[in-house]
Image 1 (cartoon, rainbow, N blue to C red):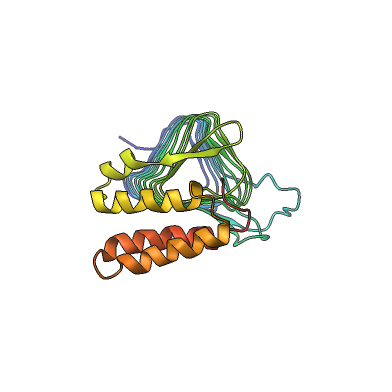
Image 2 (cartoon, rainbow, N blue to C red; image 1 turned 60 degrees about the horizontal axis):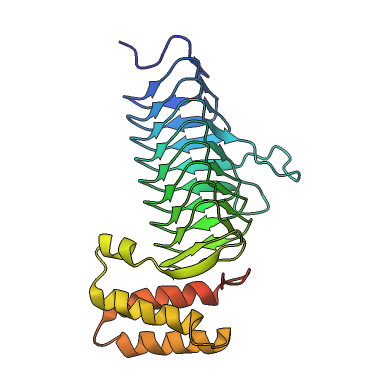
Length: 266
């Protein structure tokens, strides 16, 4: 049996690999590449300059590769790049990039993207993230590996979300969220370390204890931002010889906050 339903509309210029399944009434445009064993649900539209890797599962009525919702966009051939083994559920919208940024939107591997999620133009999503139902991220947002976005959460444009962090449901994030931190609220504020998530991902007790110390330096010691950055850098140096893996994790935190343009959620 054909893996492409008879009612699907596939442009002859599209590149469809072996084992791809395309459901009823789906539409695939001419500049689309779909990797092996990816499944496209019924009524889903895949358009634009879109590249999809292997073993992805895309639900029905999704909009993949649509033009960016940016009034400056003038039909430039920007891209959407999706990696491997992602689950992208029904009614999700994923847009291509703009020339105001790098020209692409990129989603990594092994992400779990639930129904009604919106990932806007020029976003970069890492690996192993979870976007709960109706999570929405505006343009130019960067999401680190293993981050979790709660249902109905919203993220302002140009915000960065650090690795292993977590945003609570129905929260609004308007500034950068450092790695390893939990935040929630009408305007999201930090509420501690994502310790349980770190345990599940194999972080040692020593690393978690050190990251708790990092959290306290930034949020609990009444230090200025510059004082906190210096103290965190000194802690990484202190841990370098005895706990190099922990030192690396601290330095990731330090580098993230030091590079912030929008300011840190505090």
